[in-house]
Image 1 (cartoon, rainbow, N blue to C red):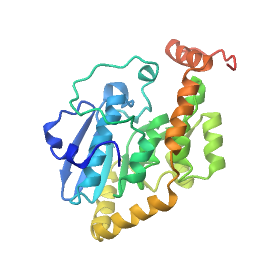
Image 2: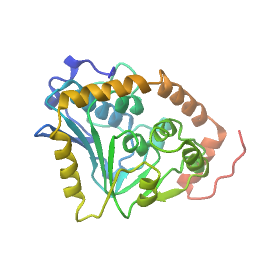
Image 3: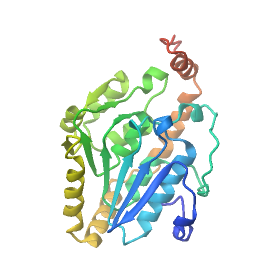
Length: 272
């Protein structure tokens, strides 16, 4: 974890969070995505807030489990397309800007705490950086998982890296290239989801999983996850993929894809 220093996050309650909600109770730290009007699309400062919260969880040994949830009718719609094109919405967040741009994949690789995504609504695009990055994913049985980037003239570079850690690479590449959606059942069959539940039982499923984790040594788990991160780490992977994404964003196809999406029409690709 190298976006914020340990001393930076000591007074976390003194900061105003505009895009997420935080709750800490009985060794469980819950991060709730809270940008429902924008389908929880990942605004740059929203990613800073998530990074700040995850650094707090990383450095705080009284936190044994981190849970991700979301308010609204979509778990996460991915990256904020307007922000990616330079139109960044103002905010009231007082969380400090990190020393360098946040790479979500790196956060999940280095937190060294069990992470759980409780997914009750559909997930799109960059939202998979949270879902695929989590050790456990509890999904509502009727939701859908979609990768539509190629339909916007983009490619899910960093998402691809996270997905191939939990899914067969050929399945991931096919999904990225064809840009379709899959069901929660299919996501579990392919390794993205670990638990399937109906809406009435999903909270019980979460509570049971948390208790099973809390019954074990937090020190042993923390050390084991750190060791796993060390033996699987690929240096600068997400930094390179961000560079590739920025390259694609500047293409004519990306501009056309974004305009077609806004205008609700089929894009006219030029291959440039």
